[in-house]
Length: 278
Image (tube, rainbow, N blue to C red):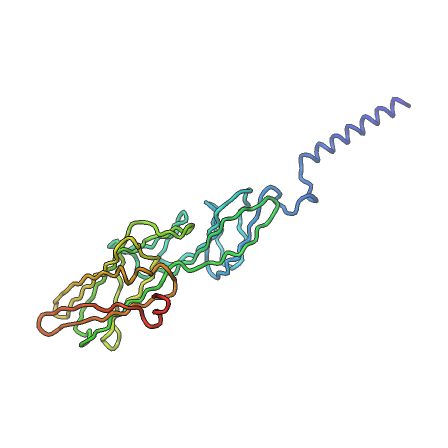
């Protein structure tokens, strides 16, 4: 009888040891708050309605709603979280937004409006990081208006324009302009009163260490052609400081009697933009 009791006690000890061993090889749900005890989850509120991407390095999640659950779990550490929309005419790769080009190599003058946001994050294991990440505008609309001081633009057959020193790309992580100075060609459209020419552009910015040269070419209906180049560096010096639309007005001086010639003078911010621009 005594031997049987000893054998039973030994069996109980072995069974208890086995239970402890198995328990040490699995997670006890009661000890963890989430189904991902070794990694962290992420939920971001961008406040943005429309297609956009959340990116942590090479990991991405496509979203359409303001509040988005990142579809990848993250190990503990420090990461750069980036969110950005997908405007027409702007490509985004490895955190760099780049404006598309025309066949002649100049930048698209009217790409869509870029919005983005970045945040350094530190997810924790067995936790969900919830944060606000509002997307902010990164491109700026520029309107150029040329008003004829004498006569009208009726005798103008075509115009061509070009501005140099424009930024082709933006690194979303630091909001630093990237690439080499590029050119953009504003497309001027005549107004119905034949005294006004207007062009719309949407830019990432200008390189402040480069000159912004404005070249304007006019061809009359009789085939006569003249070209003028002006320095717009000073008038565009503060362009990168805001994102509100900016209008620049100038006077177009046309001389059509005798030898054709023209000049563009008195660049200034439009009345609605003067307070912000200057």
